[in-house]
Image (cartoon, rainbow, N blue to C red; front, side, top):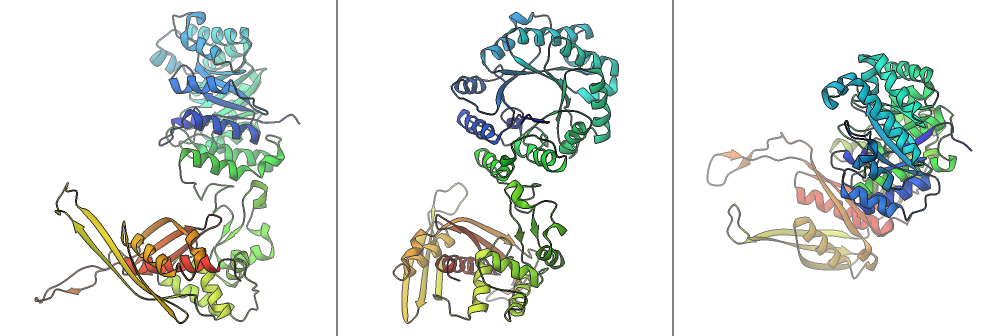
Amino acid sequence: MKPEVEIYDTTLRDGSQGEGINFSVADKLRIAERLDSFGVHYIEGGWPGSNPKDIEFFAQAKKKKFKNARLAAFGSTRRKGVTVECDDQVRLLIEAATPVVTIYGKTSMLHVKEVLRCMPEENLAMIADTVRFLKENGKFVIYDAEHCFDGYKLDPAYAIATWQAAEKAGADFVVLCDTNGGCLPREIAEITAVAKSKLKCKVGIHTHDDIGLGVANALAALEVGAVHVQGTVNGYGERTGNCNLISVIPCVALKMKKRCVPTASLRKLKELSQFVDEIANIRHNPRLPWVGSAAFSHKGGTHVNAVQKLAASYEHIEPQLVGNERTVLVSDLSGRSNIVMKAQELGFKIANDTPELKNILSRIKELEHAGYEFEAAEGSLALLIRRRLKNEKPPFVVETYHVSMRRDGAIQKGSEGKSICEATVRVRVGDEVAHRVAEGDGPVNALDSALRLALGKFFPKLKKVQLTDYKVRILDGEKIVPVSIPGTDAHSGTASKTRVLIESTDGKDEWGTVGVSTNIIEASLQALVDSLEYGLLKNVR
């Protein structure tokens, strides 16, 4: 069905201007293919007149067939004092061979005088000439009115004249741009309504997030008649970013009840968000609205109890509608409902009247008070629940361990001496004992290697378990603990309680485990042991 609101994605152009974002040509092609399959209507590939990478992208994109989206090349109006036919960057827009060309022009009299340094009439001619030339070359033309809202507030009559110059020359869309991202929704709505009354062509909106209102401002424009919204996946963009399409799309579809992307695509929204983060090599933001892992997470006991009875009490939609899922967090704020729902999520058969429930809850609160955190350590939590429910012995026990470190080479700045860590562990499995020694790049790596060697003959499946991440958090860094200095009456030293979080995988599943101690090696060993034990028991309930 024909969309009521068109989605224009500029992740590959405006988004790539964000700090820390750097896409290769191959990256851009992969993202374009995913956006097309998701169902966006326009994909802005870049500015072919600005850099060789974008020229190469468009050369490669010519060979692709897009099923849902139309590819757009981006550029500016012709330069002042140059005919449009002789402007090289306009020529490159034609040579990009895209069905859509988007150009921007100046709306603000301030920019005309101080940036372009030309007469106001010349700017109007630059807009009209470029739009007309592109239309004569068979392009669908989108005109981005740069600094539209600031320009209107400065000189409304001239701003309107720039929009109308683009429309009269044949622009298919006039898109109003809050380029500085500093407007309020009320201002956006009022000026968009003026544009709607002065133009016969379709009107779009392009916002930035400099004051945290990129999405709100886009929706304000849609409320008063804009039918086209530009933005980026995950809000990538210069400064604080662009309007986040990952938030706009479900707002349009589920809150405003307007057709935009295919309904089936909404369930792939989280997947799209994570895919683009992966390509950009950026850690996914857990607090993103709609798609973040925290978007439908519940921690407070009363909240969880209500969600257990009626999910809508604390969830504005069903998480599955956007490809997300409900998460119950377990902490010292937890009540019985948290534990029951989390245990069921982990595969345990447990109910509110399970006798062991009180003991499990009490132990969790006790450990949380001591510094443990189970929100990202479901492996350790599952083991704790299992031990309380089953009252069974662990599959192995670490009886002793020793870690040493030596350094070969002079200890001085710039020296190239090599540090070598060695770990020794003694483990008991039933009536058998194994004692192994291993070296590693650091104490944790050495301990991990020694543990695997010791347990390998008993549990071959542990060969598949690998560490993927290791995080350390100092919990009370200002705590001072007196330490006697031998041979003197002096005391010195500090001790901080440390929390270690380890993430592991067996190639199929991933899990986290946690350890806490004033000794970082001890905390690491706790998390390592839980990681391996969970790897053995994760499918056994």
